[in-house]
Image 1 (cartoon, rainbow, N blue to C red):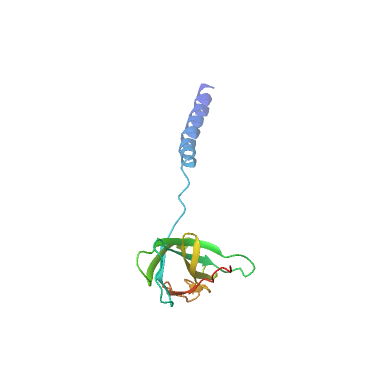
Image 2 (image 1 turned 90 degrees about the vertical axis):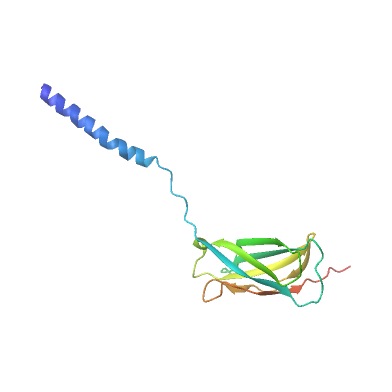
Length: 148
């Protein structure tokens, strides 16, 4: 009888010992989400022969434009203060993990000053997927003046 109790106690101790490492492993933190840094670059320019006012800012966006019946989804954005004149170089960092090779992506830009739109890209230029480049040069159009 004592021998049988000793075996049961030993089995219980062994089971507890084997269970503890498994319990410890379950408490580990979840892995960080995977990221793959990527860049889309290019230049921004416009055809008008005019200087930008001081304090102008360029906003360049990488957009997912796959769904025709929905607004574009901003994947990444870069804002840069324009200190000189055009062309202005840009470099938008994005996470390649968020890119679906079957989707359509475009790059668009605008130049603003004090909340007023000065120049805008009138079409999104394809980028990244479906044979599109990772370097996109944009030519912006002058924004329409508000009617008085």
